[in-house]
Image 1 (spheres, rainbow, N blue to C red):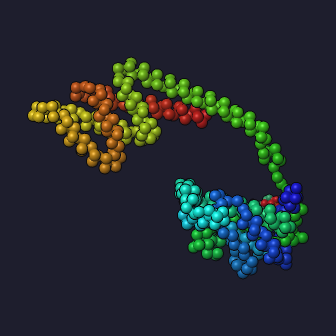
Image 2 (image 1 turned 180 degrees about the horizontal axis):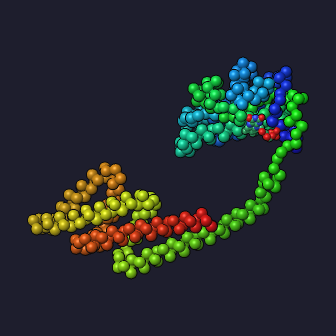
Image 3 (image 1 turned 45 degrees about the vertical axis):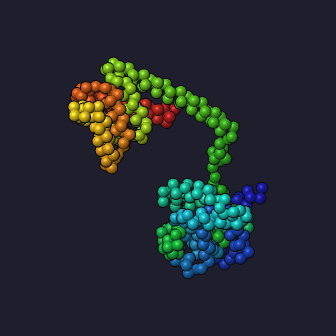
Length: 378
Ligand SMILES: Cc1cc2nc3c(=O)[nH]c(=O)nc-3n(C[C@H](O)[C@H](O)[C@H](O)COP(=O)(O)O)c2cc1C
């Protein structure tokens, strides 16, 4: 295979012969290979500078760890990734795709929205990293193309990218120097060309497919086992919750209402604490309705309770404007708990419901924590 021979021939050149230049024709071939590189979604979110200018390269050498290849090679190639990905970049790609494949641009709208959403979900740092990764694929192709053309190259990360961005005015163009390569012709004085390649043995670098099949089988078995253990633990915790609530004569349905709330409102202890507070406020509101309703009944008969509900529930609307206390369903769950419990107004009932709700949250948290442990440990 010619490529293997080319890859054996190439090496990261340390000393270039400064007297030999790469021809225009070969430069074009190298550029073509870079242009044909694969990139995520095909967006090619980078630019490639090919610098021949000696003065500029003299300026870049001190910020490239003083490496001689910068000035001695025929050309310096600077791969620059985009520092921001704008919707226009995706639109530009879609226009090119529509033109190339003779499609109607409108047909590509959903695809474009999908790409924009996926990229939009990344943080700024993730986007920069992501666009930088793409340039390494292009670098790989450049190295392979050079090797086939018997042109020497040295991929290089030994440079100060901030200084490159400054000297080459990259930042103001929304670009960042991610990786560079020097290309040209090896000098006879470069002893590195005679060195053996240092590479990990194939067995260490790769995993055989048959072994992977085995792994997949193993992971299927381990997933089945995990699910089984999770089911058992959930059953056990559920049973313990029922036993505890009946042992202490607590309303089991209230306990499970809290358990469900834990999962409904965010599966986080901190969020659950807030939900609990709002459910307790809901209970207090229900008590206020019960008390106020019975007072009003003396004056307006059966209308007493509905009028009280009207007043209090309208007021709850304003609670939803208070930061951290804006979970209306949690208030209603608290009210349901009180009215469902159907008790006289007294402190004991209030405390009993509070304890039951807390227990429900604790059992749900316990279930979630053990389930996660099973998921990660086995
Ligand atoms: C991303 C990257 C950055 C590199 N940076 C430098 C560099 O700054 N200077 C240098 O002399 N070689 C650099 N190298 C060359 C590696 O040291 C070299 O590829 C590696 O030792 C394997 O040797 P070979 O390429 O000669 O087979 C870099 C290689 C890669 C892939």
